[in-house]
Length: 140
Image (cartoon, rainbow, N blue to C red; front, side):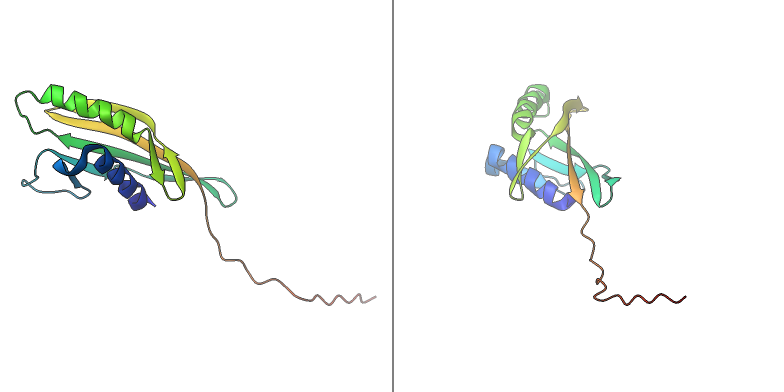
């Protein structure tokens, strides 16, 4: 499910920014083409609520490496505002999923944009075969 959420985020970013920006979902050594985005799941969690109902937390970090190295702050702030609007709600499966706890930080010339996509999920368990007939005998 994490990969599907990452793919939905990449689709939303591509829809907003277009072909001029490279999207990475894996770590790249030194040769990243700028400007680019890195979409990374930091630490997903799954907590049982009740029975087969679980609460899945998927925090993501979207890192943006700007094209400009000298006037990077203006470019990062512009991208940050666009990401707030784009990632607030994304298309996912047959509907939408809302992002929560959206925030942005510019650290060492790189925009770090944080968003959580949390949802309830139902664990699919195989059903056990049911007993068809019960014979009950009382012995006194």
